[in-house]
Image (cartoon, rainbow over all chains, first blue to last red; front, side, top):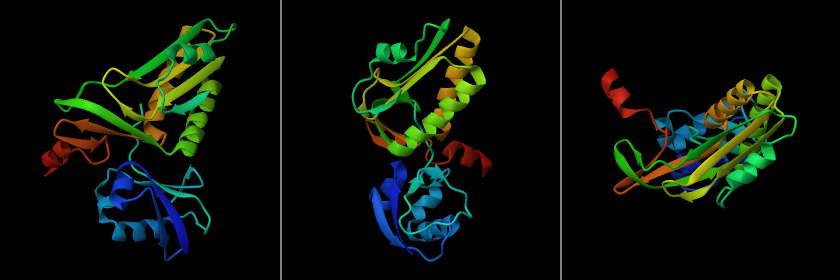
Length: 79
Length: 145
């Protein structure tokens, strides 16, 4: 499945870009995470990494579809 | 009002937006850039946000606070981009019937904002840089080993 993934903060630096196009095997957030962590092992060093689907924090079992807005959210540090 | 902006925050405008004739208390939190972190001098901070989601998550937090403490008004502004020590990074203002509710809601909003809203900051030191809270604390890891 072809998806476009946005990345912010340290995740953007690890991916080397604010948005990457990926061809992901599987259909869930968990599948995407496994794929991302093997392709970008630097993500494993983070304290946490949430995945947002359509601007909402997603559960690991949640399905994703082509056209969804997907984003990587490393630990937040606003304020 | 929820504002994510590259421009300097007008604190009095945020307070004015949150104020309400029916409120007897306005509580304001102003987050500023500290000139040091980890015993090092901070030269500047870089802020970035996933803007659409940041606004949506902030709105959820405010709605919860408004319900719990019966807020009469509120406004949140967060600065993006490069900020130097002393500059204002975030302002949270709420108004409520009485001070107890206003204090509690203001603290709740800034605490939840820090924990949940997709905003990220990098500290830039004279000899390097670091995304804040991004990686497990090395000193904790060292003591665990």
